[in-house]
Amino acid sequence: MSREELIKYVASEYGIMPEFLWDGDKITCTFRHLGTKKWFGILMAVPGNKIGLKNDKPVDIINVKLEPEFIQELSSSKKHQIFPAWHMNKKHWVTILLGKNNDCALTQSLIHESFRLTN
Image: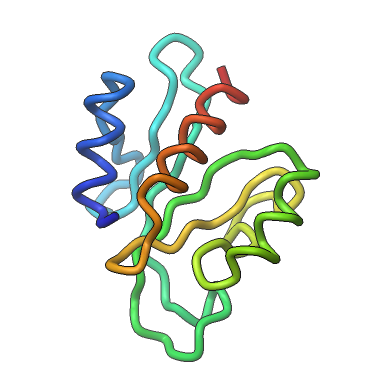
């Protein structure tokens, strides 16, 4: 799943468009509930070495909120796609690596779970 596909998915599934909160930053955006304004995802590009990859080439990621007991299991079984949350609370959030090797169905289900947990 690419950045563009993820944005289209969230728009079609939840009716929510990305929100760019930081002046001059046209890459980092959040996905928030319409009523409460709580975040259920933040989409960013970060150097790969920030999430544990071997190079510093920028990669697209999304952070989503999950149940803590699920995070440990998921992080160990999906080592090449799921990482400890970058720049977020690692007990409640994970980082999902986007791109050509991304498991779309898994990413969509994790976004859905984050949406549910933050509602």
